[in-house]
Image (cartoon, rainbow, N blue to C red):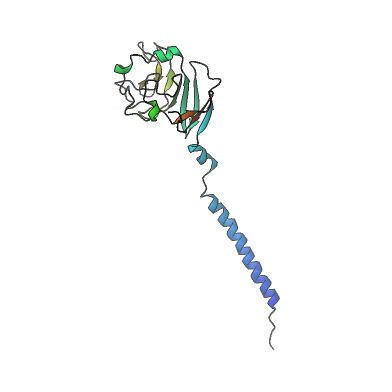
Length: 196
């Protein structure tokens, strides 16, 4: 006796097996391929950050995060800007020749607009966060303190433009990130300046 082969059933089983395998392969491939795509957090780490400075009072500082680092935005008053005069001899790199900043920041104010300072708030010595100590003769820093930034970890001092003083552990000025103004009240940190 010869048995008859049910070709319809065999065809159905073959198609069902292939379909099940394809679905299984898709379930494995989708997460694998998705892992190659950068996460939203990873994209944001390199993306420019827009900062609203409309409510930033004169003499105040705003802290934002860009690329996982603190960035300080300081609205300097005329009195704070006056502290820059005559600081050159006390500073290690007064002209910012050895420091990390865009070309437009190679000036005394280290800024596009002198009244707004934008700095990466990470000490160039060992990466601590400097404190804003804008008041001259602040007893927590020194009796002859002229105002600026003070790193509490190892005592590095920076003027109100983030330039490092001589004879402190920090080797260079605080970095200035690339940035540009978007109108009068917004700064885009991480974007090259168009009007530099």
